[in-house]
Length: 222
Image (tube, rainbow, N blue to C red; front, side):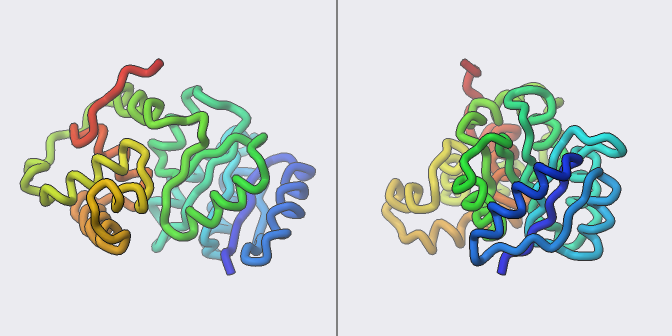
């Protein structure tokens, strides 16, 4: 059973999300919070698999809460940021805070449920409206991270770097496997090793790392 903490300052919206999400037999809402501090406290106590987090809330915003949850809870739950805003600084702030995924509140419920499942399984998620070019723009806007002590070509094997690059280009595990003519299990193994080496928590953070360190080329946002 996948456990979820709902965080939103609007009670009616939380109730709507709860009733719809719990139609999925494999997902259980274990708690609700109306602001960031309460979300942090409940996440520490309940240890949910996924936190569905609003960003703009009185009494403590979701970005600060995400940062604390990701950095101070071990192992951290995946944070799925839900917002009505598409391409503003809150998106980039959510990525920077350590969120594993991002969806607009008006997304189809089936997509939300599938997103929760993917995050619980360790896969990063972005809304279809937030393309890899938006993640590239995030990498462009933020100051470059210091060059790693070990060059990328020494940190990752050529196959690991290739898989990380294809991941950053938006390919799924199955598509990467087809591209490289290997088994999906082989892709997963290489990706796990690469993520451990670079200190990335999930696929989304791996993509951001790839853009910031030149493994994937930055595209001009259109």
